[in-house]
Image (tube, rainbow, N blue to C red; front, side):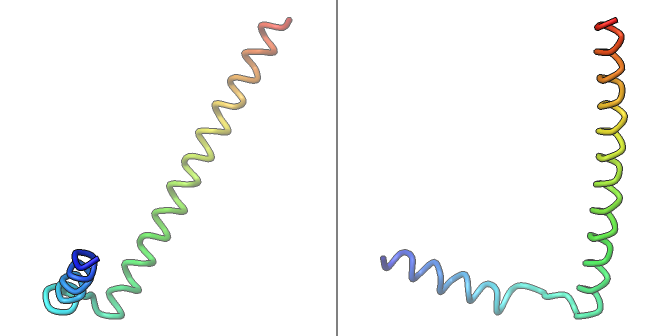
Length: 65
């Protein structure tokens, strides 16, 4: 248990003294960039999924005929 307490103490010290935190405007800007990229990426995946779904559906219709 002492090892865990030491780990928490050292982690807190590291976060408090050695991490450079972004400013509030920078954090907001980066959050917007991540959100926009996530939306674009999800739309791209949706588009590819839709195309492949249609291709596979047409393939099975072709095989069934």
